[in-house]
Amino acid sequence: MALPKITESMIRAGAGPESFRRGEEYYREGAVSNTAIQGSLLSGECAGTYAPYYRVQVELDEAGIAETSCTCLYEYGGYCKHIVALLHAYLHQPKSFAARKAPAELLADLDHNDLIAILTKLIQEEPDLYDRIEAMTSVPSKSKKQRKKKVDIEVYRRHILGIVHSLDGMRMSDAYWHVGGLANQLREVQESAVKFLDAGDAETALEILLVLLEEASRAIEYVDDSDGELGGFVGELGTSLAEAILSMELSQVERDRLVRRLKKLIDYTGDYGMEGNLHVAVQAAKYGWDDIPKETASPQGSGSKIYEDDEPDDWDEDEDWNEEGGYELREWGFLVVSGFDDLTEAKLNVLDRQGRTEEYLALCKKEERHLRYVLKLCDLKQTAEAVKYAEKHLTTAEESLQVARRLRESRLVAEAIEIGELGLKLKGPRAGLGEWLGSVEEAQGRTKQALTAWLAAFGENPSLETYKTIKRLAGADWGSLRPEMMAKLRKSYAKQVLAEVLLLEEEWDEAIKVAEGRDVWYSVVETVADSVLPRRPEWVAQVSLKHAERLMAEAKSKNYPIAAAWLTRAKQAYKLLGKTDEWRKYLEETKEKYKRRPALQNQLARL
Image (tube, rainbow, N blue to C red; front, side):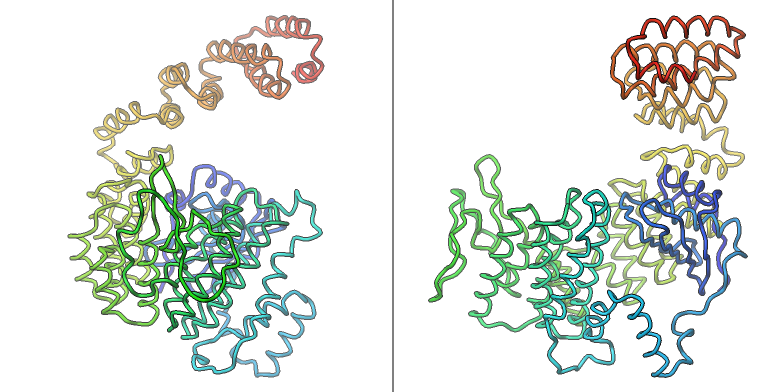
């Protein structure tokens, strides 16, 4: 398959404005290196802020950009700047990407001894790889699904401890930036447990997950988790634990003991605000595949014991722990019990893993999980039925976007477009769907449909780049389309975008009116001032002195650099007006007025 051509608008569609701007700068500065292509997979390295470089990968398909990944810590939605930089490199210099063999092809001619020699050398050069490889070799592969050898859980405990202590010895300010990477390494251990589930060894999976929960939660005592990255990971383990429990045949005594063990661990995580959805694991242990009683919450909010048996309790009863194996949340004195839906999700995951398709679809219908039902039909290649069911049952644009993405992953681009266009007519936010669909439609040469999608995106999430894309696609219809767009933009709160659009169209006075409006952010005024300086120097001089004098009068040293920036604009405006002498006089008077402020004097001396 010939690789598709990507466009700048496709890159913009997947990235935020700042990420796009910084990524473009990175590309121009030559920050991208070691670029390669394997089939439809692009890869490369991009210079990083907190690491020498980050590894970037982009998967392409006939509809454009399919999947992306980067080893940086960016978690704000869309492509990070490093991904944008790699895409720009491919867009502008596709021949610079070296053709590389796929890993399987690269290693195909090596015999057993060669592979052992390579791995041995890697371990010698990177000793930390040993624990990771030891854990990986115990994970069942497709050829080892019937393995009988019992896995040594302590191997995983040592590996987990190695991860959580990997930041020991770092300065706190440095370690802070690596907590996200630590959490990602722990997720790899979680993925190993899931592989045991895939192989039908739920017992091993559960033991790994319990050790992971125990050691990862303890790490909160010596890891700076200010951003909640470690706690967020711990709180995500509930579903995996529930899936492992649901995959096992347990006696009532075993269930009670498991509930007891889980409660102790969850009590501990709760003290640090990490409990997340862990309650669903207790529900799985207590109820299994039975339905959870719907009317279980007492309006009086009294707590009760989890179970009755002859074993003595070794913890204090917690009034916030209810009979359903979940925490009781109180609001205005009334009891709130949550978590039932989470258990349904875990059940569906187990049925899906075990290939129990009919039961899976039946549970989806019973619990009205319409989105999962449609996605499963897509996976089963029952495309016509999936589209028909989606048309009847999907209710939001976001649901349609998920289905469209799944169809595209299966190379069913036409069907993906059909569902995407359907979603534009549904309720809920449509910006994400519009941006995704717009780039896909354009890649297929469907200009009119792409325009419709981009208009939907612009209506909810206006940006200068979307405006440019719509203008380009509209062609001869732009004259009649623009007034409607501008009317909506003026009514929106996106004053920054409105100002940028007016500046793009060289409507200088209209942009100034926006900057002079009430409750406008200073960034809007700065943007307008910088752009209209050669055309409206009088206004720039006036507004610059206004903001500079206000900042200087506040007597806050942190604001002095900002004040100096405004004075720089004023200086430039005075020069354009031919009033250099007046500027010098103003500057000397300002220095005299604030002569007792050395921090401000330092800034003024640079003007």
